[in-house]
Amino acid sequence: MQLGVYSPRRDITVRVDGSIGGENGSIDFDDELGVRQRDDIFAAELTWRFGKKWSLRTQYFDSSGSKSSVLATDIEWGDDIIEAGSSVTAGTSFTLSRIFFGRSFDSSPKYDYGIGLGLHWLKTGAFIERDIIISFGEASTVSASGPLPNIGGWLYYSPSSKWLVGGRLDWLQASVGDYAGGIFNLALGANYQLTDHFGVGAKYQVFELNADVKKSNIWRGRINTEFEGAYVYLSGNW
Image (cartoon, rainbow, N blue to C red; front, side):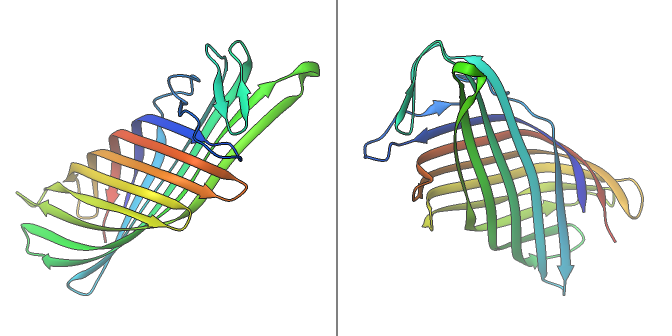
């Protein structure tokens, strides 16, 4: 079990196409709309080993942010064009839940490596709220959620009874339901065992999602998401 703080640099770009057809330009919510680029968020991972070769691994983190600003240029959002000089509040949300079922090929005291199949359940969204006369807000929100399967593997090495180093990788490029694109989920790091049951660790973790979204009457467009940064945690094992 791992509980800690993930501090990634975040980059989210969203495109919302109009209902008639054609593609609008992509909007970088961090650079163009000022939504914060770095976030300290709670993250958790859990591994359950059953039998000598099998394991079930889970991961979770949630990130959201919003910011009010004045547009420097016109932007296209669905069927609307929001003109430069407009006061807007923009925000994004992203939740990742990962389940990974794996088989180990070597679980000796020094090495542990294997491959498996997993599922990422993703929930993502974005909104732009434009201030209009009489102080009412006019909001346009897009959102999508669903499962994305993946293949993956891991390799860990223990140079001593106190240290564990290594990493894992999940990847898939496919078309599933309302999404067509790919995911990339990589973590590399080390763990130090303080006692028989507790330790501390740090990882460098990268998650990328690049997907075309085809949610009828909700969202037609594309999202490019990247989280990249350090994850510091406390670990427990029984």
